[in-house]
Length: 319
Image 1 (cartoon, one colour):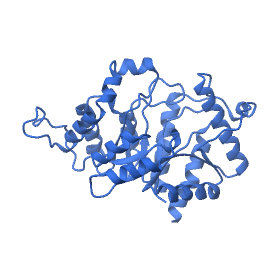
Image 2: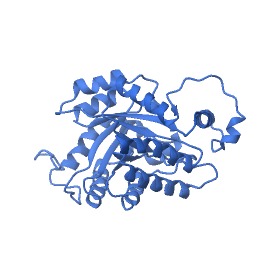
Image 3: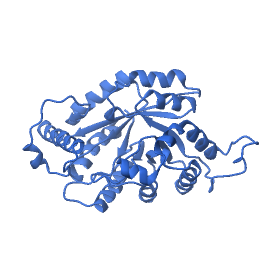
């Protein structure tokens, strides 16, 4: 089972944004030691419960404290930025950490309407340009503009010996087709999509223009030492998510969450002891046939988040 991590840099109950960024570094060091394949950092803007609006900055810090694990954005929200600048940033990272840098791309706004406008006043127009921006970015990474193109002589420096590995994070047909057209790996955001996803992954595979398509399934997981604690943490997660959708206070303790009753809900969250989680992940593998599972885990505290990833990571070492 090939496992990776998608880190949203959550702010834990009773902690600060600075604590959250340090927790991301701490988790990356653990993941590096346990043999996780890659470590992706998400991009969000002006949200009270997550701490990283600039993945490239956090990745440089994490890179200095890790040795082998691949590092990347999951994902840079390309409509906000010029492709040339993104290429320069990730070429710099790839120069600092050779053979370890990924460049995940997405098209979501990553924050409120006001924050989105502050970043990109013509965001919807830039979203419509996503295919063109992806092509331009890939050409800057590869330095292969046609000779008659205005950017033919422009290079995104520094030039690394191994370029960043691009992939696309998405939940819809457009992203699947775009990844296939440009010979990119495709990560399906299973945990944040109402779609089943199998049709999208098959669409990507069928339309892929390169030698071998590569798929990643991004899944939300809570792994605990007991079923009872896993159930409490899963309930906390649903209470917090419900509060966020209503714009209410979301940074609460497990004890506070226990006092909140919720109607029966359908969820894609996978929770339980290691054996239970492993069986559920194996079922997902059989159903979706991904090349890799990317795990995201939101907990009320850093200790239990580390435990969750450690329980899964120790299984990697045993295989």
